[in-house]
Length: 495
Image (cartoon, rainbow, N blue to C red; front, side):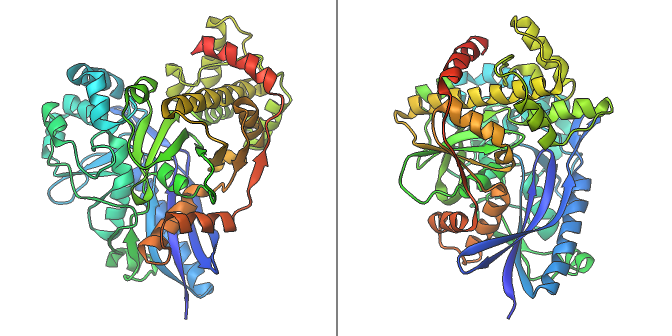
């Protein structure tokens, strides 16, 4: 009898991958089937995702998984997709996708955010949504679409977030998974209820608000046309994992004890937070601008969005555009050899959020704050990494203040956890032990939530015990914290 496997498509803002997971004797094996780049398309009307290109790579990933499964006596029981949050496609009455989905870095979102907050009031909007104010929140994107192309918006019959759209392509069925819906600022915190009254008040169409399903729900089965094109079985279930990539990553945090813990999902974005049973929309949470997003089994991800390794990625791209290519190991080594604490920046500085010219933007910040301008690639990357570590310290202190408790350990999961220099910086800056791994936390969480949906994993506690048993974890112990205390005093003056 063939062994069950589960195919996870994990799409990040820089790359995507198809990973096939197999459960054997309480441990997870993860096999990479296909990896591909994900790039933005800057078109005359704004910045878009190459959705068709992504879909073609998903088909290729499924095709390769089918071949691998046959060669290794595996049965693909299900597949599921996770992606970044907030972005969506509009779907017409016939099921047609209406236009190319915009990317969250599009510039039209900020004016829409400012207009919306002015209409509702900031405290009222936060209490209703529980979501940190960021220009790319789906509610602000919808408002931008309302103001620029109301005809398209009014013709739409439904809205599908990016992973929901790809599940629709696979199955022909439309459903919205709860963790991805929770990123939108259009859902009541801790529920699967749309804020229809708020949408009506903002003159945003409520007919777009479709059925929200929990992580692990079966959406349908593979369309015959997809099965024929890939050699797959039409019996393969399309299961919604925790479709927001951070929700899948947090599900895979390898916690096996009762000590208070915080997490950092590290990648293009850094998402730092704690797991709660209920949303926190208190005055303190509002003032600190923490977000309440949905997780697996009804949990709440109380977190802050931080710019993350986007800064380093953009430095790398800038040098590549000038003809010099570095891999990330080379960048990290150059940073390790650079002078400590020479230049610090605020990663949330608005110009850093848009693509392009990152070295020039870092130098401008340094000049404006009377610091030495970073010139070499090592100085630039060290500036980014130290500034991120200090931002993590600041965020963790805010979490502890808002929640009224301390956290004993910080777990770092995701691709960014491979950066050992940043991990040690974070332990030193925060003054807490840091445990890193697994690096493929998002894909692992995706796979194991699918396994929950298939009845092969009982609950979140069993899921995490499987992750802990299957992963090589590394602990970074704080050292040299006095120098970081001094750096933090400088950092506070910059933000």
